[in-house]
Length: 212
Image (tube, rainbow, N blue to C red):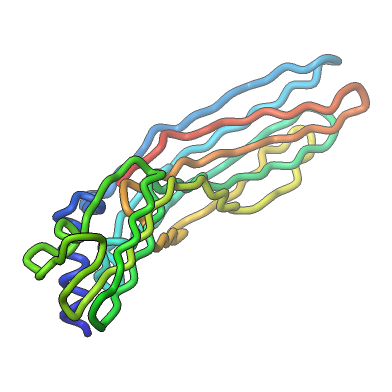
């Protein structure tokens, strides 16, 4: 069975459905914005120390993506009370589900909504493939492709008070994604909401996206 799973992974890579993770760590640029709201309310939100370190999958499957991220999110307000919240947007280009089945006459179901066309011979080349959508050999693959989704991965929240700078300090946060059949993109964000006597205001900063 282990050999069959390895054959499946190799076949998916050769079919172009999987992207090899980037090997190098990256340090990305800081970002900051200052907003002025009615009533003289001013607030600043930003992030720095943004670093990404891709890691090999623990089980060796190319459908998995693993990385560690660092970031320092911060905010300042001059009036009222504030709430600093931060996280990461995680998006895979193609959600992939592949199941290996033993036994003859196993169908291959390829969902074409993602704009990818694939037949049995391209999934497992070299097998004895009958005419039609079934494998004549004793091994089969059920492959489902669908457009990827964007997932919000929160880091946390922190209250802010006038005159002080507040932080969300995050190091070595692990992001693990399974069943990813294409590039994975991770983008940090930080929001700051201010409640004052004159106004309720909010602002945001989005960091540079990292793709592997």
